[in-house]
Length: 244
Image (tube, rainbow, N blue to C red; front, side, top):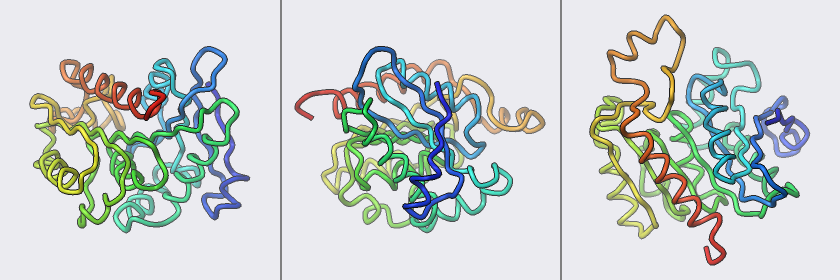
């Protein structure tokens, strides 16, 4: 598991000058299908690296791109969220840089998916039509013009929590939009889960964690295994299968 310096590639593409990421590599000789992973709002922390490691164990060359490379969460969160709301900007260039790096890696088969959690889920949804072969959206924000943002998207698997107060009704809206556009998809809302339910530990600064637990944010050991299996099945179908 290695930190990757993407600054040279990013500079050429007009992205973050100090762009980097965490690369989790499967065991074996390869080549492997690739996955660009986009972190939640708290940044590329240990929890996100564990998610990347999990995908590597499932057989995916996983590059967790650090969208806060230019100064950490405090300096980059607001501008990165603004980029997501606009649907354009440096964050999308950085994601494209990570995709290009993976696709060109000698360890890659050329097939590349994208996965995101929380903030990253919103980015993964918007990036689904930007050259990826499959996307996984996990409790991600939906854009205002949902149908237009999704037009031409790759196959999508999405997981939401029924107790996630920030995204009430998001799963149903996404299901309707994807069905109307004829995009292959699988969307599920887990009734007992809240936000960030795929994490294995409480997220965020220690002082905020009690409040977040009250708000229903955090792990759901009952729902997470099925959600992870849905992700792995989706990526296996579109990234590993010879006929995909």
